Figure 1 (tube, helix red, strand yellow):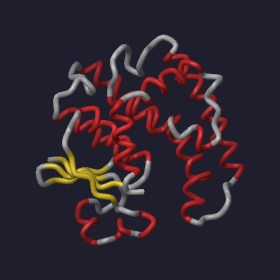
Figure 2: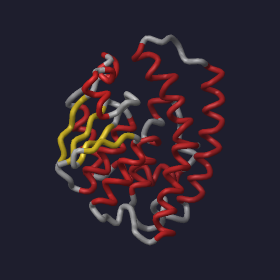
Figure 3: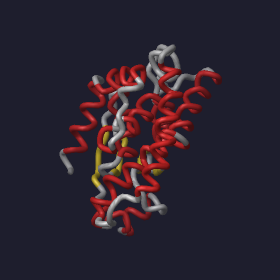
Length: 209
């Protein structure tokens, strides 16, 4: 049995999307970061970093959403994380790209527009917002160009890279980013949006919000 500890964040959704797409049974435990539950000694035992999500499996714990997504697909020997070295490296390549580039800047906008308000940390820093928007639009153009020639990030087949990246891109509307100039990216987003696994994961997380 897989056990996930998470909060209402995109990082938790990445893991839930993969679990649902794999069709796995799992237990979900909500950790309310706004109430400081991540500082509880029992949680610190499974993740000394004090962040979500965390996966517990076979008596061991694992944190960082990318590592968890890879682990799940690897343990289940799923084509979502293909075995051939080059195909696997291409999955890693796109996961790293979103973590370090487009996803990073979308997350920054989410912090400025959403998290600050939720946590009572004041108004968005508009200098930071403008910097993030500059990178988002430049990098969205790169991804759009790639998706004009590919159905999914790694070709014709869905992989964990798509589910991972989708959790970043789906924030666009909430952070005032218009993706309409990038039709291939929008079409990819809509393909992911239509997956039952995505809807199931959202429903599960919303029940705790």
